Image (tube, rainbow, N blue to C red):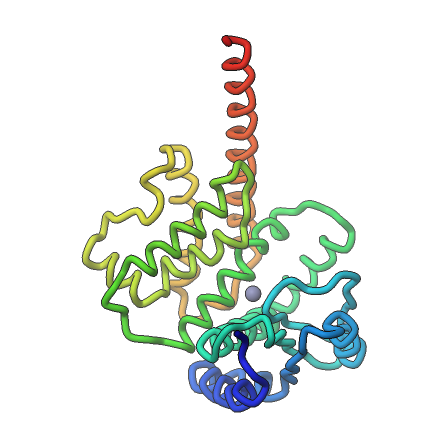
Length: 274
Ligand SMILES: [Zn+2]
């Protein structure tokens, strides 16, 4: 089952209005974003036509996300692959998440461009590593701000989701900053998790099965992100904070590599014991 165009269209206006209500300073920016609903047939061709029209980068492979933000030289656009989305609630959430990208990218244009340059030139920098957490985390945090809901009565669904993100981010001996970003956005801005943590302040969602080293790494990243989200204009980040996040990311990468190495080593030792 996927959402129909007819059901999706009115949600675009609604999402724009509610985004502007929370971020009035970005009214013109949000109003000028073109939202394109792209079907599954020829999605890459259609996506690249839109990118070409606004002066954004083209892709060689079909996009794997439900939606994406295109930052163009002339305009910005959001492309929603609506046939990959199950229902109106998800559609709306993905859309405001993309508006979150538009706001955070445009508010940090100089940093965004330096990171894009690092990616193009294939250089590893702290700001590039930091941005691998930051860009998704802030977009999702903004989406949760816009789509503010009452805390749910049942917390296990939300805590399960967070554990799932954490398992994806470090559980497979490699580090996935994308999943960690969603974990962090929920940690700080999901109403259900917020009310759960206010009742059980020591609760470590999903962390109890990991070791102390991982807890230390998490504490570092939680502190940096937490300080940033305390700022009034939390979506505007400075390069120093982004670099600090980058160092946290690099520590996660090292942790996962070390784990993968020691697991392989112990497998080898066990093998030799047999
Ligand atoms: Zn995103």
